[in-house]
Length: 283
Image (cartoon, rainbow, N blue to C red; front, side):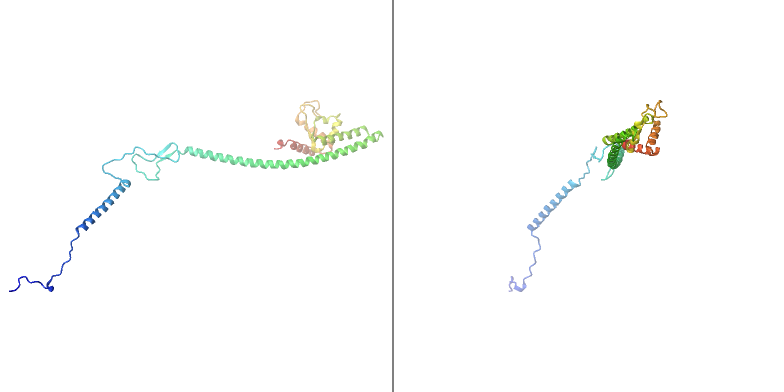
């Protein structure tokens, strides 16, 4: 009888099939890890949305006022926004009255202009001062020359007196000539010693003013002035009347005649002497 339970031979064994079922343990760990990662991502997104993009559909936001710090202060003349209006960065919200600032700017410009004019005036004054210094230096040189000339005139007058005094004894010279020479020496001596200017009034036109006439002849021209001494001592031909400045012409005519020069030359000399003495009158 054939064997009911035959033992299969080696060639008769079927091929084993691979086990495709996942390992439950590994699968569980993977799912848990995915859940943790997803949870972390959700938490991060929730926190970011809460901080940077909050939103809600069941709440309202009310803002009664906001704080604005303008660059300048003043009255608002133009308000360019309304309640609940959306604005963007850089939008002009209001306009401040510019008139006070315009006035301040105008005042500043006026002050600047005035300062510039003052500077220009000071520069001009400096130029005038420099010119005055140069003029003073020139006058100093002229004064030194005048002193030297006066010293020479005094020496000449002194020598002339010394020559006439012996001649008077021998009657080769008159007393008037000697007196005139002495007067000339006195005048020259005074000019050297004092450096004064000598001014002649209407008296020099009187007939009995012989000594004064001699002085008028001898005074250096650069030290000579004429005047009227108003209201007294009117010159000839108005002697005895009330004197007035216009009569100085007669004084000048007499002094010019005594010195043997023209009235124009005398007038130019006395005018120059006056402005040299009174510098303020020249300016």
